[in-house]
Image 1 (tube, one colour):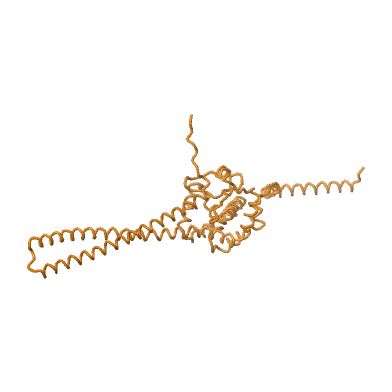
Image 2 (image 1 turned 120 degrees about the horizontal axis):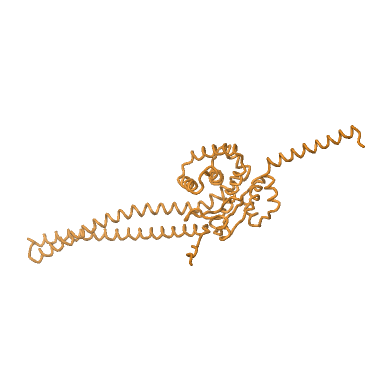
Length: 333
């Protein structure tokens, strides 16, 4: 039989255990996502390819934790299309963070676009970070992101935001959180500190700049060629119009000259040779103009050929990142 002092000890122990259980339950409730993520990571075995992406993307321990908590998959075409359904025809996607918290990254084999998988991985990992923020943290981050967005003059970014507004209404801040962090330099100190928790921004921005420069060089050259072709094409049309008019007038004047020569319409040989010399001069000038116009037409055709070649290169690049390459058969009875 326990003494009264023994009862006190037992009650104290039971009370302490109860407090510990309550405290643990409270912690578990407040940190349930962390617990779920931890358990997920314990059961997840990343492939060598996924580990390589994690390494090249320069994720911190915290960034790698959130990345692996999504059980990321570097997927081939069929698996990727199943995991990441296309939102709009003609707008290929490189990765996605799914409704059930998974990350799919399209396996890109084009060596010209080296680094695209890693940047995509960080982009999607930041969606996982966003999903785990509290409402207060999201509100504060939204204010910072929108302030940064307001200072950026970039038509391509504006077009992308319009796309997300169509396909993912209400997710502008979420998308900006991933895009600004992986693609844009010179952010506020607060945003830089935020991203530094998860990855090395300098490394990721360098990877992005490397493959993006491939596109930029092609588009820049294409834009230059287009402007040159437009200006040269207009000039050729104008010169052709003038050449045609002058050629018709010269033909008429030569016919008149020949008729006068046949009918004795010249008062002297000197007059004949003088007027003939003028016609020969006009003919020479018009021939020189014809040669020059043909040279411009050849230059235009060369530009057009290069422009079409660049368009083909861009198409090949786009095809290499587009997982949607076939159209399903028409349903039949």
